[in-house]
Image 1 (cartoon, rainbow, N blue to C red):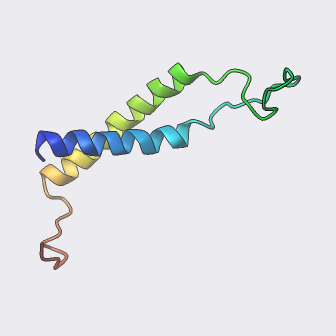
Image 2 (image 1 turned 120 degrees about the vertical axis):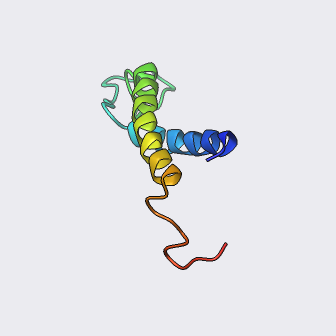
Length: 82
């Protein structure tokens, strides 16, 4: 896997994981101020979620990298011509 492909794959994995991590620990505000959305989280903890997203993404990227680099799953074995 060349470096550009690796960066693109990591970014895609990171964004997918971010959208899966965002709902973790969300608690609604009991008494929202006038003009605020009543469904908005009281403490979004975005830095903690970004750190969790990065950690999970590194693990998933390492798995994808090993699979691609060592050809554990090869399109040639599946009969796909590129």
